[in-house]
Image (cartoon, rainbow, N blue to C red; front, side):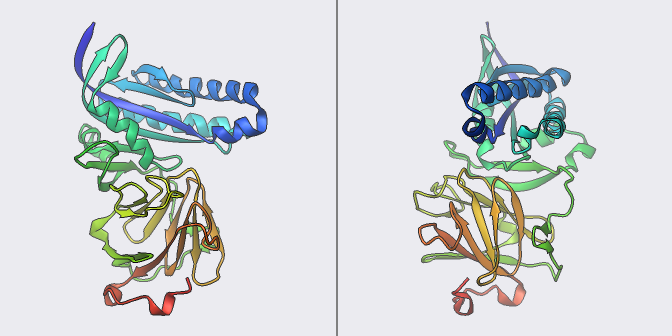
Length: 313
């Protein structure tokens, strides 16, 4: 029987399973991943959702209203964190979740439509442990729930002509300014950020966030190199600082200053401050890896003069 209904569609993807297959072998890794996805599926039923299907290391579900979809997403993240505390092999596994709302066509227990396509492709824009949703999902939430979301503004989604207004759920993980190098010293809030790769020299202000760095022609900052993922990394404005999130399979690497330590982001995030270099798919020291030089700008520095003093970063 075919039905057309307004639904909230959820896709969840368990990242890190490839490493499990390498270390545990096919049989044991398959069992652990299947068991973990089955555990996450419990959150769908708990929140009055309908499990459409499992997808190897992920799942697809549908909900009558956005509230239940968000509750399920939060519950999934919670279940994975609790499982990782008990099962050491799950500690390098992370969950990406994306939700979209709209009219879907239901046929023989499956769902089709624009909301399904958008939710599936939004996973490319989610970092580890992140839940990203469309504006339609946020509009269906209570005022209290809406306050937990931060706008990423309009993002181009693969295969779709019109951009999508995307929000990310605040997981309450604390101050994004803390990195492995210690606490970032807060100065006056920056006004913009400059990115330079080869002859592509652009300055972005906070109103232009987020910036998606990637090989796709729809990326905000397009880097035409085969080592770069279609959506490789994302720069967000977090109220007082710029945050860089890795979205790739090969990783993003950040070096602060000239010759400083290099921070490896594997589906993780860090705060950008000062000036430095972002290596896509390899550290900035790797001459084969595309490297984007960055500089966090304050009002007096937002001109487009060449970065003469910082060519070495």
